[in-house]
Length: 76
Image 1 (cartoon, helix red, strand yellow):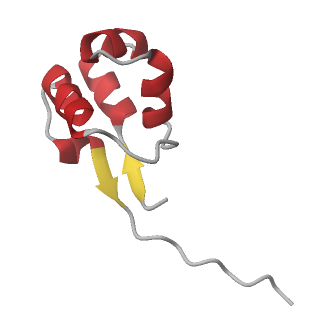
Image 2 (tube, rainbow, N blue to C red):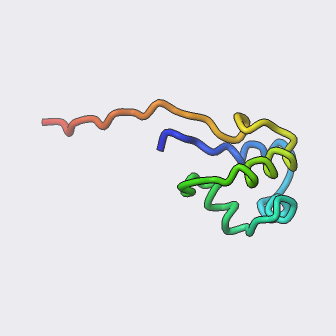
């Protein structure tokens, strides 16, 4: 997926655990892990705002777009 979630980078910078961030944001550690690992299909703006408030960052610090790499045909 071309949208990359960098929550783990911010967790390391802020020296927070997933459990502590989940508690402060008000979501379950399992849901935070789904978001952190890039498996989420969507994120509520309220959740994104809470993450930014707790981590003292901007949404662009947590989410970024990467150009997809086209699939290479198999060698013949």
